[in-house]
Length: 143
Image (cartoon, rainbow, N blue to C red; front, side):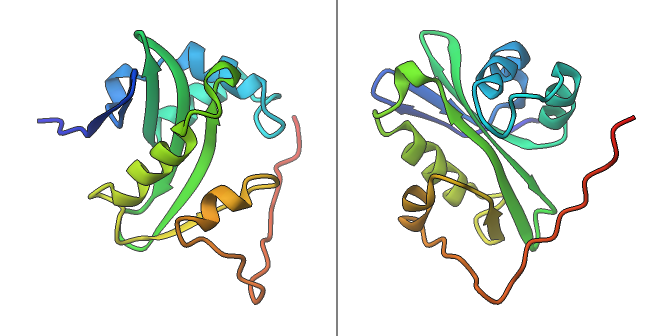
């Protein structure tokens, strides 16, 4: 049996239910971001299938997403936190981070994330830059 978390916040519903994620809505949200604007829809769909997703809905329409990739034991990487522009400034970013931080499947894992512009949001939840660690990336060559 699938057990999901759901919280209501004002006129919004936040959930980790994987069966309600709207791939088209997520694809369109990511197209408006600097980090996900070039992702093909097939890649977005595959990333959703292989992640713990936190969705935000308003009037039945998906207006937000955050993904976590994790081993459920040691580490969880937080990715693709985005709220539709029309719904920003209403505390939804904070609520989705709060939901992730207390989620029973990952609450005891170390959380990692990358951001260029949202440090203040994440600092509220105990995130800090680790000056001793370097982030190394390997990008596959385009075919």
